[in-house]
Amino acid sequence: MKLENALTGAHPLQNEKFSRQMSAAKDKVAEKKTALHDEEVINTDKVKTVVDKLNEFTESLRTDLKFEYHEKLNEYYVTVVNPLTDEVIKEIPPKNMLDMYAAMAEFMGILVDEKI
Image 1: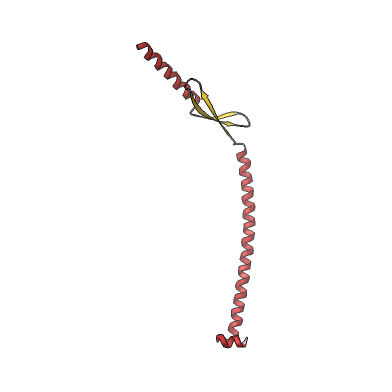
Image 2: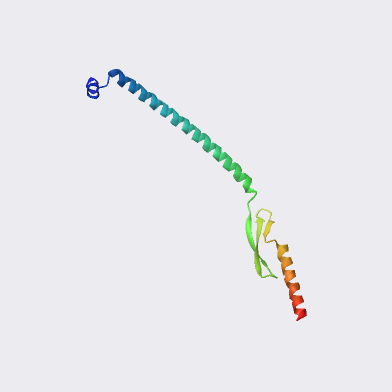
């Protein structure tokens, strides 16, 4: 130790002070790592519970897409269906709009045919 002090030119008390500071710093780092690890465990547990709750909530919202054929228009449209109850949630575009369009197209065809 005296040889090291002689080479570095440091006083023995300064080395002891430095050693204590380094030891205190290492202890603080260890405490922070432990605290961060505890927070990670808490956060992952919270995330898991939130995800489980979201999955339970969205389970009832599961839907299927079906492509339906409209006979009069010779076009396809999409229906969103609840697979558990086979209830149609939404039609894209709405089937009644397609029916109206087909009826108007048929009516326009009748008008044009009669005038010719």
